[in-house]
Length: 469
Ligand code: G6P
Image (cartoon, rainbow, N blue to C red):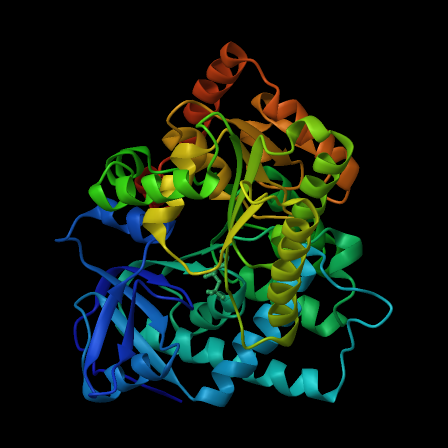
């Protein structure tokens, strides 16, 4: 069951997501410190203005958050649910990140995975309880006829549960991930597949980042539920774009300038060295290791690049409760170290790897990038691909996986790669590094225009309007 602040006020617009806009850390002195998060949803919601009657329902994620809820510390417009820690862990680490994330990103390594056994069924019960806690909180906090926007794979059952509690509400669901193709979604036990689809279709409108994921969802619904299940339902596409105004201003503040100086030092040389930049969570789907292998192959087969290029790779730890993520993080580090010992010289470090999350340094790297490497196995959108062309100082060439959602909008001006093809990716890096200045300029402008077509505020309002109409 969920403990949180008593809420008497009822909101007209509600957003629900696992990770909320604020998190708390608990200091040794018992002091709680609040940290505001970023991301598309945070800036999207700002579009409705501070006076709008909005409430964001999210879950308490760590000890700091739980302590904040217990002490009644919070922010206006945010309702944090303190769901029992074991239930949350099974729903978040178990079902959400080890099953649904794997299915939609096609990450399973058969024949050993997946195994849907009794332990999985227990986790599934926790996922149901977790979704129910959200549905109940939303039902309690929503005004008559309110619009509720439920986010992502953590909350696939909540729309259906909420609909049963509050048929008066306008309910939307938005998937920030890809959706699995029919033949891969069929890995899931039939009853689970059906519950997930029925849960999402409990919403009036299910929306996705690209047409490709929307079509995959529709195909899965037809396969498992039949045509009737889609009767009266609307399927939408809203391709979240980069927030140009925010990024351009933020990328020229002092802290970014300082990091730019220090990054240039790490690149070294006489100022003519080129950079290949990537910035990711250390996420299995981001394909960081194959990216490094491609870079290594480039140095191996095209020695003219030795001493003349540096790969700046920022890989920020993510989901470290999961062993497979911890192993992957270590593999990224090992691969970078190996390349540096094989090719490095006293005056040149081929790979500059940083793992400590630092937004100002990420922006500095964006500005410096000659080549942006975005090679995910599968990705709902990938905002880094959209942000780098907007921020880059002198234009950059984009090497982009055809499996990223962003490919639908950016594909024409990017150098396309199959993310599994390491030698192909090395060729693409060479092509990108060799691109002429005019071509690069021209492409960067078009990439930036495409990337900013639907900034977060518009993206959010578009969904709200579609839900209300
Ligand atoms: C993806 C998901 C989000 C999630 C984010 C970070 O973008 O679509 O829902 O919040 O990854 O992952 P985390 O597990 O740290 O929340």
